[in-house]
Length: 320
Length: 261
Ligand SMILES: Cc1cc2nc3c(=O)[nH]c(=O)nc-3n(C[C@H](O)[C@H](O)[C@H](O)COP(=O)(O)OP(=O)(O)OC[C@H]3O[C@@H](n4cnc5c(N)ncnc54)[C@H](O)[C@@H]3O)c2cc1C
Ligand SMILES: Nc1ncnc2c1ncn2[C@@H]1O[C@H](COP(=O)(O)O)[C@@H](O)[C@H]1O
Image 1 (tube, rainbow over the protein chains, first blue to last red):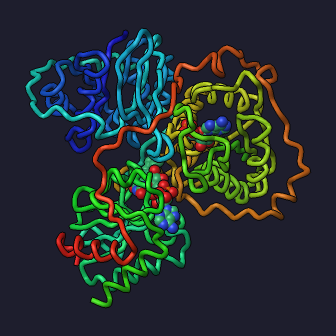
Image 2 (spheres, each protein chain N blue to C red; image 1 turned 45 degrees about the vertical axis):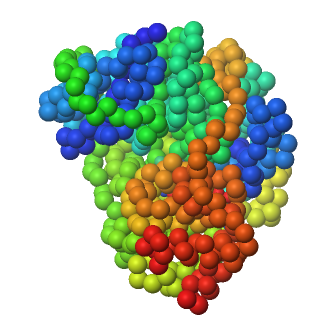
Image 3 (cartoon, rainbow over the protein chains, first blue to last red; image 1 turned 120 degrees about the vertical axis):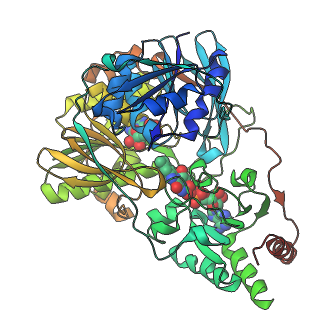
């Protein structure tokens, strides 16, 4: 088996939490820590922080890498990483941008969004993935004879918090090669502030695709009225994509991060991108499918049709 | 602008409850309802809107068998002028790299300025677009949720975490993977589908595209699904049971106890 590397994303000089979990993903593969790779411009502090966790850190420092433009990072990685290696990423919007193409350039296998590692058998890395939004899982064998690029779902492994590695940093900036690219980063545009701020609400009545129709949004609004000032209506992404509610109400990795006292997930299946936005509080799930993955994340579950259940609940609360 | 949009036929998760088969190694496939991968409808809509502005043709392509005729026609009813089916026994069992290899063959048979894929499909891989771009040595951006046309280039927005948008400039030709929400895919009625029912959809085989059969399909797959299983469930939620009135009474108590009411 080739050497194991972990690519560490960092923003504003801080290493990404999920990247810290890759050390334990590497141990599940080879028994050893991975060699970490950080790229960027003026990244000594980040490389030193990585060396507190990983025994070996490679840094690639170049002005062209100042913003993690996936096309440029991919070029650098393809030059720095030897063929046959196993390269770990945290599965996120950066890995989706960089990792599939890198696997082609390295001549390696590619597998994304894995939620478990069962070790190595011969030239097969045995991993677990999910399909259908987590309703079923699959065992997958990845041929690592020519190496592999593996994107690991955040939260699958724990991070190493001990900071006791005392690692060494090796400068491979000279190996990065030609970093010109046909894709140029311009800027980050932040979302416009909405009229609502769901992050301040004590109770979120959160609706998903199970609300079925735009006119049924009213059922959630009525419940919010009945529950009073502390409640607000939020939603999953398909509701925003359909333009039934404004983007400021979306909970999840590409929306808001919320920490209410009570989160009522109504007709939401419980994808990891949605759950990634819920950082605390009692989760109450209402879903007509008793096997919906949301029931694994929730503390309280109700199997019901929300089109009938929400008005019934509203009525009872109004009577109180 | 000549645009190729890659589309995939997938089980429609809104229409199906996914269950395991009796052997417990696969999902029950007999009664599955299939449709077009959600992301691909956004990609086709975007392509049509671009061609409406600057002229050109939209071609929709899929790797699959005769059953895919239906989904190609659905996308053609949206407004894609041409369909293309990549069909060969040798393609069965392809992993993402195999699919990208096959699509590369189709791209090279045409003269496209822009190739669009969905950001991900039913298996949540999000792999084919980036692989295809790397194989073709074309610039790539994933999770695109905004496209502005320029001279020989595009200004694109990529969705990143927290609702932020990463703006990039990218030269044509290029490959983009499209994220949901970029537009509102138009509705397709039965009449629209009937209108395109006579259009011929050409088929290409491995030989037609000069693809080595050993590099695709089961034979070329480095990533192999062994089986499906239902993961052992943790404790999960405390399920409230009883009549609706009883459930609501319990729920109200829970809401009160946790600061919800
Ligand atoms: C890069 C990326 C970022 C993403 N970011 C986010 C994000 O920030 N937030 C987000 O939410 N998603 C995000 N997604 C999308 C995510 O993967 C899921 O597709 C989405 O969360 C699913 O939303 P849902 O649960 O409402 O719909 P579905 O998965 O379709 O689930 C609908 C649920 O409703 C139930 N249901 C149907 N009808 C009824 C009824 N009448 N009564 C009760 N239950 C019913 C069904 O059983 C099902 O469980 C992202 C995806 C990508 C690729
Ligand atoms: N069999 C296929 N035929 C055509 N395009 C495909 C196929 N499989 C995947 N794609 C394209 O690749 C995108 C991402 O799929 P995936 O990488 O499988 O998650 C899809 O949205 C399609 O655009």
